[in-house]
Image (tube, helix red, strand yellow):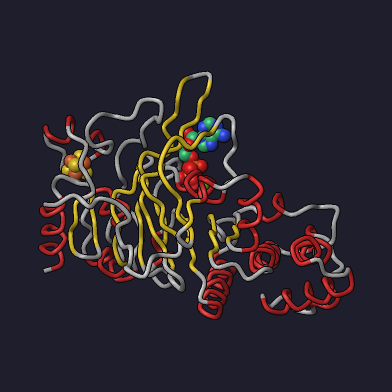
Length: 344
Ligand SMILES: Nc1ncnc2c1ncn2[C@@H]1O[C@H](COP(=O)(O)OP(=O)(O)OP(=O)(O)O)[C@@H](O)[C@H]1O
Ligand code: SF4
Ligand SMILES: [Mg+2]
């Protein structure tokens, strides 16, 4: 069992984004909350990485640190590297990072209504991207806004460009958010729960749109979600987070077939599956840890059905499970074997 040093999944040509040993903490009156504790993940051009984990596991904070939009204070990046196209973003000046943001990497948030400006028309907001970043005239940027709205399949774009965010449905607003993110044709998009606020049919449409744009532009996409069901069709690989660490990384199909970490196993067993109708759904017992007091050893041990004495004392490194998989569990092999046995 060899620990993986960092950047599991990285390719020789160099990934588009390579997050290495990232640490983020929040200094609050109650104490220091260790929200991100050595995250490693990478994304290549044209690839979709899904980041999964329960609420509070550090998915959004990691994304904010990558984008350079962390709330400081109270949040501080205390270690690591964020290599984007080979350059460490954490060493750039504020001005340089601002140039990268929007133009080369962009973010789509869950809640379009609070991310869009309520007193500006959608066209003005989309157009602003081109005026500010590309120095276009008002007229040209308006034309660009209509073009973008067409591209994200908002019907009657030429008329709707004058409307305000509240005049759009939830799904259409999310398309506007995607259009904003796509405006300058970035190389990477981070979508943080982009469809959580939408109903199921609209969720699927918005997800399909994202996947299609990603293919068309060969972008890297990081898709943050609670929902393992959503990612099966769109992601190439998965990183599962727990208490601010990646505890399993794997190509999407392998992880569904046989998880190598008991936490991933618990997440998988707690989603309804059509092929197992009538089966009782499993719920992972207990709650995620308080980040002010992360348990020693494996942070998951108080909730883990497989926990042994070693789990209470020794932090499991990220073990290499195969050339493309890694798991931070002392008993990854037994966990994999179990999954195999259950299927027979
Ligand atoms: N502004 C803040 N001040 C203090 N602590 C914060 C702040 N933002 C985040 N945190 C801490 O970081 C932890 C991780 O938050 P994060 O938003 O990354 O979770 P998440 O995995 O995205 O969860 P969710 O699925 O609910 O969006 C939180 O549990 C909280 O302890
Ligand atoms: S290291 Fe131990 S406690 Fe942690 S997931 Fe593996 S078996 Fe469970
Ligand atoms: Mg979040």
